[in-house]
Image (spheres, rainbow, N blue to C red):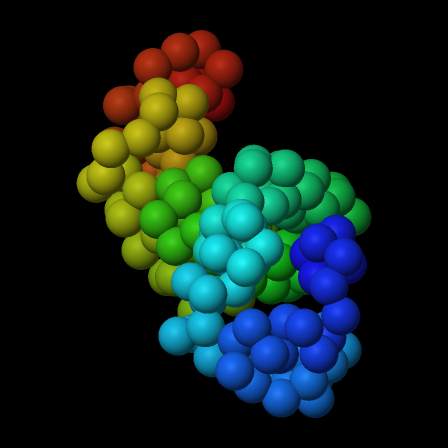
Length: 173
């Protein structure tokens, strides 16, 4: 943004009342601006605080899609722990994203550890208790059914399966 505005580090520093070394450190990613400077930076560069901190890129959907694609690649290659890791990191940026939670539940279930199976059940119940799109809801129900079956909780698996809406994810499956 500084270069786009044809400014030197010294000019930015003077405008903000800080040292040129601070601006240099920001640009080398050795440090970050104090949060109280963000409004002044946004005004200086005639942009939004969201643009400065990268929220526009985070919220554009592409970053989340890349996470789903990478997680699916890991799961396809049976690298379930890596899928769990990438989905867990994504949930730090998108803490209420039910699609990510549902995918994490499935990846956790596929990993097979008892601890992850219990965590997957909790995630499924969290998704199912919230408002979400039907596809996520039914995918999460199917994952929960799978998890219960894997844990040999056949009665719970059948109860969830009986709630599934269509043949692809039905009781018969």
